[in-house]
Length: 400
Ligand code: MG
Image (cartoon, rainbow, N blue to C red; front, side, top):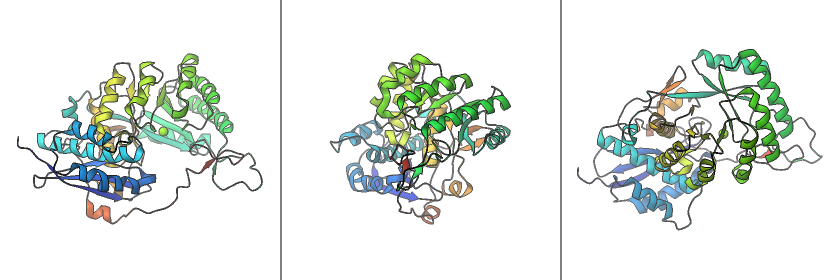
């Protein structure tokens, strides 16, 4: 096979829905051969675009497209100071695009390059919610009717409904929540849901790091009786030492890690068997290459994958998740955000979900592309994030 080189590295940014999606497109020396990869960091998208266009592109032009591992390793250290969501998302866009190209050159879907399928499709979970217990049960039932067997349950947004406790005079605007009120409300919600629906449906819940560590331990213990499929992010990355306390006190399965940046951050949690699911945001970690490695490491310790799959992972990123899902012997479940038709039009080949399972299209590479003309009709908007201006009842800023 003749050497094919990187001819250009481009960025496509589009906002067809709420999230600003960033895609890297690598053009090659072979006419018509290109690859795409997800580099979406919706809250800091301009920084990622600059990292790709101004820093990675000059490094990559002329390099052999087949040398994915070398390019990944080089890109991680070429700036000397390393890690972080901006650079890792930029590297991910390149890494996934190179896997896409390698698959196209081989005439195979990426899951074949990883080692082939362990399953035909990836079981997905959807997000049920509502303001009241009754609305939440209705929402779960609607997803069950669509075939979903795994359903995440939240009352209101992360941290629950808006805090009702009074703020002090002069409190700053923001997204207020009450951590202990959130815990009480969700124990009531899950009591009601299990009473109404029984235990056959697999339920998940995301704490989103909204609790202080000792409350997170208590909450995980109380949630044990609902036999969740997993409890997500009960603790923040800053509080990793507390996972041991949860483990010692209950058998609630724990999912963790969407905020992790470096593969080594998983190491203590995996080797001490303190978590059960790898909630990696694959683009934030640097792409398919590091995700494959962490998945294989987790497999040795009986820890399953549950790649982050919200609306601020682009459809290209969801396709990358799916190829890992089909291959990983330790696949657990896949989060699915249910993109609308407008997004699907921009991304031909977007994974399809039917009956609660996500299916590949068996095109070569990642099996997905970007319609650049359509994408350009939805340019990204600038603005200051509001949902991340989270506050405790007394007005103190808190983790979103
Ligand atoms: Mg989460």
